[in-house]
Length: 488
Image (cartoon, rainbow, N blue to C red; front, top):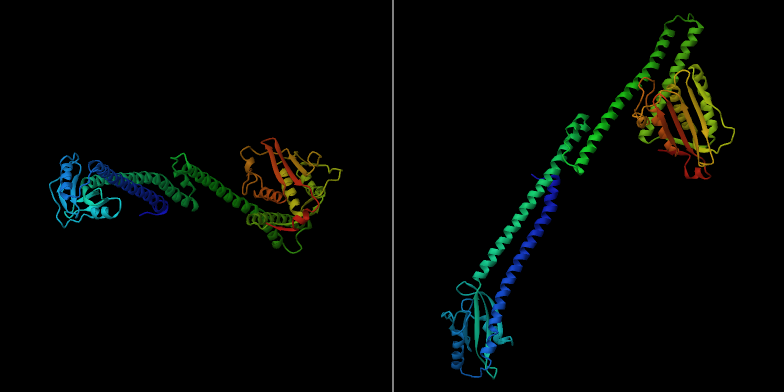
């Protein structure tokens, strides 16, 4: 019946609350009982205290004289409605009572015997009479001038009315405690329902989302402006992100499939052409063209596969860096030189003047940094139209002596404000019309992070894009703090 949060609340919170309420009720019952009994004891004690005045001058040894004096006291006793008073002779027998009822000899008067022996001459008793009635009594010993016991006066009060009142008040306290417990259970149940039910619904929806039903998040009800509401918002946002990521992943698979299919089709086509042609009948120009296409498309395939492998290594934390002290100018100049011919063929201007100054070295993986340079320059050329300009420069200044920057600017189509924050995310591709898998920039950004550097992008749609690569310069002893082969 009870499970989960409800069960824990029942076992923990409710049990503590019940224990506290029970302890409070029991304590109050004890307090009420104590107060009522103390009130009766105080009444008996104050009444018996009057005897010190009534028998203060009593000196006779005669029991008859004591009985006579006691009779006068009993007859004039003004609290007969509150309690009974008895006169006991020296042998412990009741000889007179304000009620007119003389107890039998079988009725033991324990407080009389105790009063004679305790040295104070006073004793209190609380218990049941032979008749079964609850009573409380106090006996005070009367002595003469020789300290001889000549009798005693016993005051007795029926405790049945007092006990009935205590029982009534106890019943009220118990009822009040039960009402409090009922209210606690009711309010807690409503509170738990307001938590458990939404969480159960969220659990069902989260399970559907986990199985690919991202539309289930539309059924989330935002009723509460608290932690539950925050959880609802978080799951809704998570579902939207997962839906976006899933769509991006599907688009990525589609793009990669297309990227792989295109060179494979070209390779297969030219291979079949060369195979079906008669041996020796294929002219040299056609043969060279076919082989050129096959080599070019094979390189393209290799590049795509390497990019996918790098992405897989980064995702699984297996990216390996072989770090060394290197000249960043030389590496970047070599990369620009590799792309110069391509830029000319495409009718674009690739501008770069290598600085004449000698810049400090950086510490990193030579091949991985070239990979970053190639990716950024390749993107710049891809998105720059014919006749456009791609300009690159390396910046090192005294204002920022700990870093070297490489800034690459193009006059291409630019990136929209909505796409700009996402272009470095995995699978994301802002422009679907241009070839590419959409993971190259994500790989480049991760490589820069592994070098303790950064890849920053500024762009305006229709204006162009500026990519800034920032590298920390090499510091003596850095190779001791960073092993040559870093596996992440």
